[in-house]
Amino acid sequence: MSELQRLKGLLPPEMQSWVFVEAAASADPPLISLEEIGRDEVEIQLHLDKWDELALDHRNLLFWHEVGRIQNDAIPRDGWEMAALAIGLGGAIGELWVQDGLLLVLAVGLSGFAGYRLYLKNNSEKRLQDAIAADERAIGLATRFGYTLPNAYKSLGGALKERIEQTRKKRQRSFFEDRLEALRKSAGKARADMAQQQGSSRSVTSENVYG
Image 1 (cartoon, helix red, strand yellow):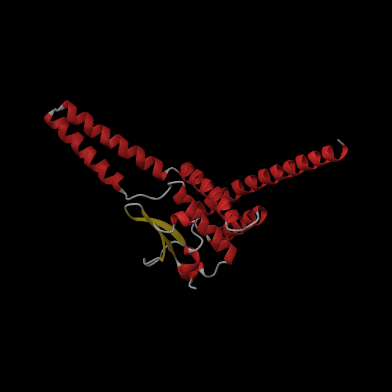
Image 2 (tube, rainbow, N blue to C red):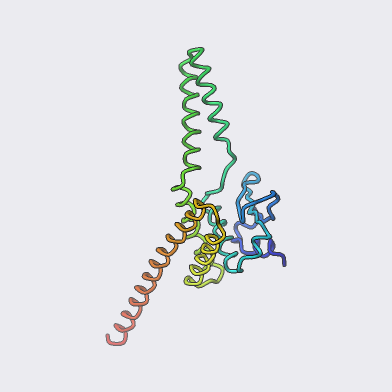
């Protein structure tokens, strides 16, 4: 079984008909990325040479992170915002010349909406929060496919550490470090919740014994 076929089998059954796993075709692609390829169809693209160098568990959790982004509807869309911004600004300037108030308001509104979308797309805090949410999804998917919760956290943490070591650009490295810190906090909370549940279970057992 090829790696692409193996990963296809790691998709939740409800996603296997519209999510595809392919080797990236560009000259210097990222390790793993998403692309919307049609109406209700998404492609997960891999830099296979770099991908195959990773440990199996690390590959699985990084793959499920991307699946989590799809589930959270955090897929990068076509860059229509720049075109809309240019059209809106051009229209606003033109309407100032002809002094059509309604069309001016529409053109300014289009520019404002496109500018806001560009801000959201490039906002580093939103990108981080989207990534953290996808990491939580990845942990859930790992347990769905047979990982214990501690092993799921350990595998994703190891994958993020590896990405940090391999990343030269400071901003990107900081992005992975922030995700790792959030993952540590989430793991600590999960560990505390499990301990509390076990304590409650022991308490109930004691009551049954001594009641």
